[in-house]
Amino acid sequence: QVQLVESGGGLVQAGGSLRLSCVASGSIANSNTMTWYRQAPGKQRELVAAISSGDYTNYADSVKGRFTITRDNTKNTMYLQMNSLKPEDTAVYYCNLGQRGQSLRWLDYWGQGTQVTVSS
Image (cartoon, one colour):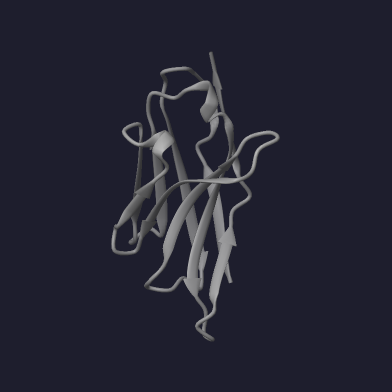
């Protein structure tokens, strides 16, 4: 089992910045992918940014150039630096860790989410 705990959400004005953190603990495989998702009220959950254990990154078009995803494998922690925030970035942000289990089946683990609210 893997446990994920997010932090860093809050209320910020448009144009401001926030840094989210996600700390993973438990049975973490050397090879995994960590991802930030978000879900706004009335909308489906969407991928924001992902980073592999080899530091390959992927971003949603809506956040490219504004958000930066990083990870510190020594601390089992993933970060999301969010700059130039817009009201449409308002959502609950979830941390996800995906890895193969002992049966080689892909397993997904989720954090509880952290609220980000951007005021106009």
